[in-house]
Image (cartoon, rainbow, N blue to C red; front, side, top):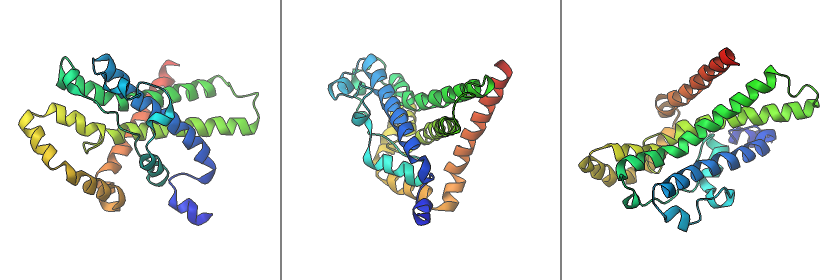
Length: 224
């Protein structure tokens, strides 16, 4: 049991809560991509059945497994055809950003609920078990969605940050970037699994997510 715990990013007793949070986070993330693209005029997500809140359509096996091992992962990408957009580059950026922004909003919503719950004693009459379950769920909901927000903005394919950068770059630069994107998976694995590289690259990014949550918590304390 201890060996298994060392292999996982979360304690075993938290796994059911992580699964529930993943269903919410991944589903809303991909739905945000699909719905935004569809509203901008691209029928591709609708034809492929992605404009839905059904989690089974959006979950990716490898990306889901990686959540439990590394603490972050991805869902099944939504295919987008930018040629249907009236303004392909601008709308492409908005569609790419819609997914991470959905995770940021979920994280902030969880923080608001937690703040109100503890400020006004919503769980005072509940059993200790219920109080603990709700607290653990909200903690994972807040932290994991913030991690997904930060992680998906990393400019490496197939992450959303790459597509945002690709749309921001001049066309000739974007073409050159596409020619070397096959190295992205190697770079990704190096920065994830080699501790010095991890600490120098994505480690500070995730620390930034923690600071963002603390700042929002202070803001809530001042207005509620």
